[in-house]
Image (cartoon, rainbow, N blue to C red; front, side):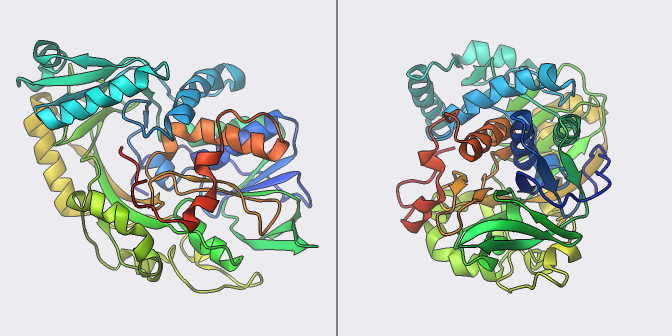
Length: 441
């Protein structure tokens, strides 16, 4: 895979039983398992490929409150505190730093939108600083360009996508949990209408609780259980450049391109919101529910190709528990890069930040961002299958809010006071239309 990622050793044997089984080793899955293990539960984490190998290692690494939708802001705020605490609690390093995030703009409309968000954020105790032209131009001096204004969010930061999920997985092992890679969960079994076990390609684990943190695979997995979870994946392409650029901000967003310092001193470059829509049977099935999302964001999306069909993550097929599934044929979603986007991103970045001319392209990759109709994740127990908890559809925000989501999932499982109000995230809302409810950011 082209995106850098630390390797994690798997546990030797699959347990016969566990208090909880987490399906999916992305950032949400590992944090859910970690917080359950911290509460003394016997946890098994099963991952069809490698820990963190899909979108959890292919994102920008931003951990932000700035410009969050009102429904996600509480969990984003809690997540920043949890990112801070994780290293001290676990002794593992996710690369998290509160370096602050810088936004620059020459659009009066964009600046007015940021100002409105600043006014809202004040009501919930979040600090963000609007920058006038002189302040924005000074903070953005590496661009060599004048700016009408901007925003600096000092308490936000970044973590390292290459090391974050693996670091949490190692922490799970320290707490006595088990981590199983190349171990796809094929489905579940029930007794008396309640979840009784998780069936994997390497055996069955008896359990009364399973958390599905399957990312772009979650909807097709739910379909096997008779659960309708509307989900659509957008193929996003980004690139990394080598170290060598001096004096750049740690994390900068503009309408043209966004830039993030990586742990190796290089930078990740991306165009915010830009992506390809690869048609699949699942896309067609859920297209009416995603119409509000498309109407709001069509300018940044373009038709894709056959990557989705080849990957198999959005199939409508049914599979058996005693035979290989699409997840075993496609261990890691590694779709083709959109070369047009990569060229445009690189050209825009060189124009925006001249010091990047001292670097070279080190890698480029694509990933599937799993979205819900309203752009807010689905987290909650499914009433039709007691013991089965869905945690998916993070809509490109999962990395930053992963710790809060994992903590909330552990709260739901153990019956503890939830870290945030869980009601805005419950999957039951997908029975209703998303018109007027699509996330602003």
